[in-house]
Image (cartoon, rainbow over all chains, first blue to last red; front, side, top):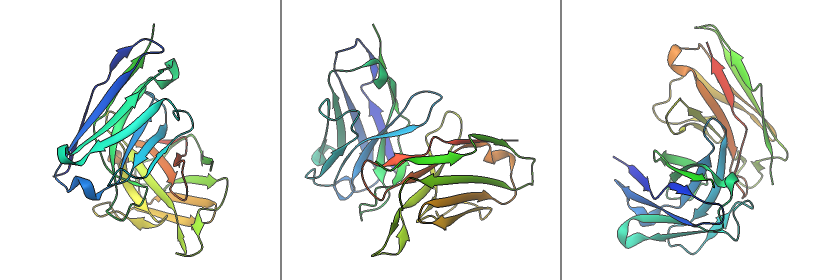
Length: 121
Length: 112
């Protein structure tokens, strides 16, 4: 069974930093691109970032470019999101999401349950 | 960026009746080489992450009931729930994967 478990969320002041983690199990992690998708509670979905299987290809939404850094450690089956210079508008539930297949489809298969990030003074 | 616009924002349908959700993209998501529409549909129930329903605009994901169907091409797409069941109450999102940034529609809430 595929499992994605996020951690690292919390309350942080504007301008602060957080590092989210996602531990994957139930599939060969290095064979899949991975994504971060966020959702303001009660609102819609926003794609944040993607990283391919070997970590060589990375892409970001304009809203986070230059502030967030995605990375992965395939030896630990783990995905990370380093979030710097946080703004109130970054407040959201952050989902770790596996790409659908090993082809790198850029649509979303299994999702984690999410970790909540709250940026507030 | 490709903007995805869904309509309506919400709709109420009686049990057993048909529900139709529309999704329009600001530019074509039909890939000419593959002749496939890079459009997916997701269902999100309260307190849960989204779940994949349909990919390539009309291919039902394994395990998804046959009452869910997708259609359309180019810039205009439709998700149809053929006979609404109580468990179908959810928010439905379309998403394009033609290019990054990957973008979603704003969501359509389907209620009974």
